[in-house]
Image (cartoon, rainbow, N blue to C red; front, side, top):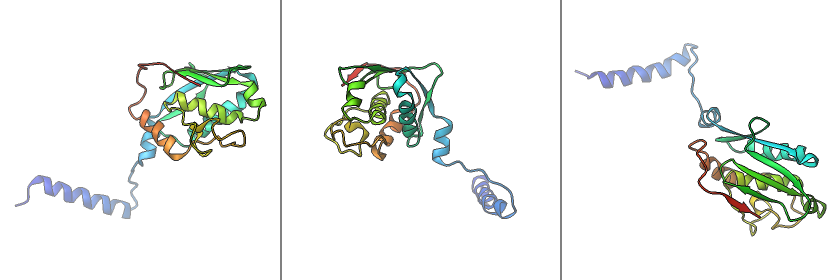
Length: 181
């Protein structure tokens, strides 16, 4: 005689095969869909960088297009503040987990550095990524390392995977603050 457990498995297996054939809809969520529904939303405010608001929005959209566990959105209760400065270089003061101040240097932009790349790079710090200046132009975290001819503002697959890993458990309180220059 079969026990209830194997019978239950057989019934579930038959249902999974026969219900779709009968026209019944069976819902299955992909891993990406499941992750998106649980994504952490980080809000940024670029009002203190009036000349670079559209570039900040594009940099956020670039990250949003490649990560699943966290999304960047303008407005709300901003925990990432973007400032426009003249001189001193672009940099970020952050905890590496969604709280920080980004400073975009007008002089760096005037020297030929792409403002969307700068902002995507600095947002990467707020998402927990370190500098990798010796990296190629295809890495957003290589920053100004590849020179002013590098206009890539898209994070690569490895950077996106690291950010997804950083936010895999949602939004956790910051433990330390970091300055990235």
